[in-house]
Length: 213
Image 1 (tube, rainbow, N blue to C red):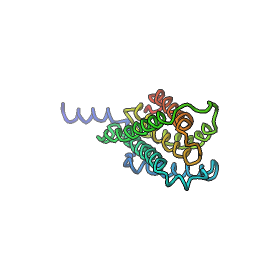
Image 2 (image 1 turned 180 degrees about the horizontal axis):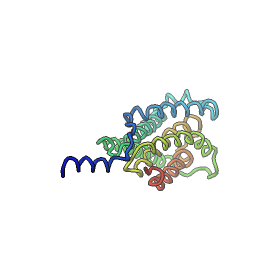
Image 3 (image 1 turned 60 degrees about the vertical axis):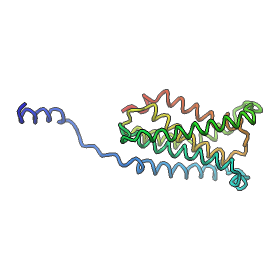
Image 4 (image 1 turned 135 degrees about the horizontal axis):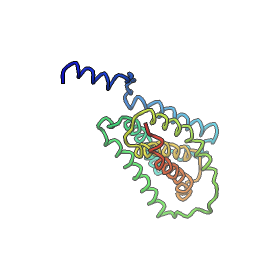
């Protein structure tokens, strides 16, 4: 193929393409969401739901601190993984996805062990206020992170949905624990954890539609 023919071929292939803005580094893209989501959840807890009155005592409880720290680590790592998944090849760092998954499984396993010891039978099932509080805590952060995820070009929509669900669910769980005084593991599993898992499952099922290019 002559140089002229090659130039014509390139022109035909790229003639209608337009310049696009390069994505910023994943950490720079997700850092504002993390900061604003943490501030939003704290503000909702302070102004709307109110912090639990025994919060100062709970900060000296090693079990409570471990629980919150594990959920926070899972949520933040999932948010960071979300930013990496916005790049088609995840910048060649797919191992990042293993961190939030491992932390989430550790958290769920720890909750199951607690439930096995304390019992997982709630006093009675009803539409608890924590359902409504959870929606208030995660609705806006969930919408924003899904929008940010769609601005990328992920090739793993289901994994993206899982990371979104972990990021939002974990931070929303922390918000509920800071406001709800019920420390019973059955209440936590049915009213604090299960709704977020259910919502994440729905997002996962619709992931190929939600995160398509």
